[in-house]
Length: 293
Image 1 (tube, rainbow, N blue to C red):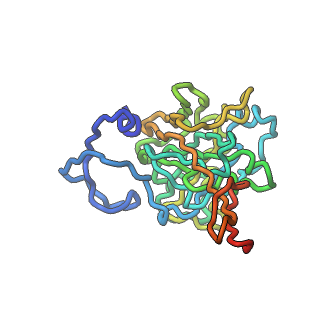
Image 2 (cartoon, one colour):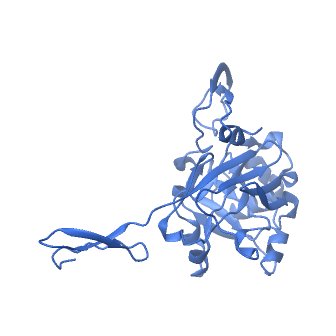
């Protein structure tokens, strides 16, 4: 059983403590100390990952389900570090996206282990520290409202990652990794790394041209077919949903329970200067006291 699934089942998980304060510390060594996990954190901190790089439309079957041509070059967009979320933490959908539009996207995330700039495809894998599960959570209406995807994919907590990083040295061929999204016990997505249009090495090399990929950089490498918006009828995330991104070869299960944020109240003038609350519009809070905004 993976760490994420075990903790979701309230099963104690003992772990060995390593020296060092970060997964990026190449000198970290195992100690004899054993502890039990109390709470899972993301494998890296916000400061370590910086801006999250994401590749869109990178699985052949996904392109087919969306009726789109295969891209000639990797399609890049970004998520801010504030998107970072942990396994076994709530996936909070902001009130701006609680009208049944939030969607899941299982993605293999690549972690860069040392600074990479202008690297070639044959050398690119030398810069990869390892791999982890990730979920490119997306508010579809906001995504499709404009030409850029960033706003609909950039809400707080919309990039859950974990529960662990599997080292590249123990997994030399990431194309064999199998990915699944399981929603309330039902398999929604199922794919494998060899369906990628651009390989991990090609992605790392491409993104490093003229740009330094610093150690700790996370690259989300695209999602397989089966996303909620492509289904008939569409399937979107609802409060109480049990959402799991499951990957093979030791990557384990990224587990999140979906919660909806309550819409804030709008406030308008009451009697004798007192205020009263009324329903807000589109999540905008307005304060009006004695006729003055």
